[in-house]
Length: 308
Length: 308
Image (cartoon, rainbow over the protein chains, first blue to last red):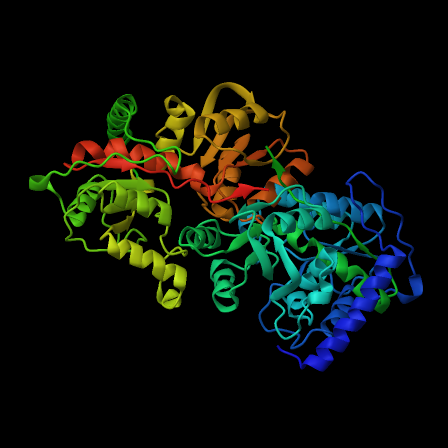
């Protein structure tokens, strides 16, 4: 699943151009739940089906289609003509309602729809909340496809590139070692926290480490890759700082705590899962828009938590 | 693994008495890392071995020993005479140092020592932080045993009872349905957050739901039981509020968010994993102390995170 560097760089530059274009033209980013979406204009003659949109995306993914993947249609038909596409992290009930209000009927979500990684639903058959969500999707004839494994396999990783773009760090992307960002000059953990919160629109993060630690090399792993994967990144790359979306608290957090207690300078920022990857689904909209004849809109699903 | 109610109640009352005694006599609870521990007095003639202490504990656990359990000796010898026992959530480097300074050589920890649930170490063989921790434990000849599955199997669940005691809710414990606490009168989510933080010594929690929701029936699941287990508790018991230690953010948090969005009153408090179960390891000290001839001291490992 690696590509040669030249192709990867070309692809990256093209993506960057499209992304910049997207930003300039102002692809809709809804920043509050209350703001109404504009109606997405329909184009009756050129409506692709759900499956056609998926196939068009997979044509850009090295090694696709995969034999095993969680990236399946979770509800709805692949044959349904698409009136509009919404990209998001989670197809929450709020996102579904906004999608319907916008006249769109295809949600591309990075994460599960039904509260477990494989979107298994047998155990939810008589669950009132599952059924309310399913009924809402069926009522509005909205299809949901998960775009997780494939988007991370794209080169550059679509989620990573979205996050780097938000952080203004896309120029530090290294196709030969995408997991590590080397800053031009060291920043303190505290300054990186402030910068991350401001540029990514995050109220609060959780950290382990010394806020005054100076960080030059940063391991960047949005989402929840799991403790072993996160710790192996630390072992192999020895960054000053690891930025992740989510940890199992008994794994990476304790490793970094012990690292500091044994005299190693190592910091951890936990951004929150949803907010750590949302920029990747925002970056998807301008990437996908030129390829399809219907509107592509990003609707952020936001952090489910409030601090209290 | 169920007990009849009468026995369970008797056991519960006896535990409660010991716990109250423990609180009254002030079994050491170190609330800051800087406070020095008193030297644990040695009793040369009556030192039990590590394995004898374990066996003595297992004699109180229904169905023990288990064929499969993570509750194994993680480092050190079962034959080693014990000079003092420390109970904690995580055998962090700080906790190890405090244990050594106190002259104790046996740590009973609820959670893994080496950053993964099974405490597998092959992947850590050349890891500097793992080796520094292992060397520190060996230098001080400290044995570590995990007491997780067995403590949860004890009736009452030792962790649950520790948490209920901290919250002042032990009187609401129902041996027939330990997962649900019914308050004598409803409290708002906000008031329960304040009460939990104050009584458990937690700086901040994360919530999903309406802070003004009135809650009477509370599902209590300290630690990280996993999304399916947490959601099944919600399905089966239909509490107003679920209090947990940790969630996978794509599971329980999203379920509760969708519940609220579809008109269901359901709240979630995420306490933090370590702090949600620490009271159970604190409760262990006065439970274990009358059974052994060496001192048993609780040293909290505290929350690894800072909010930033």
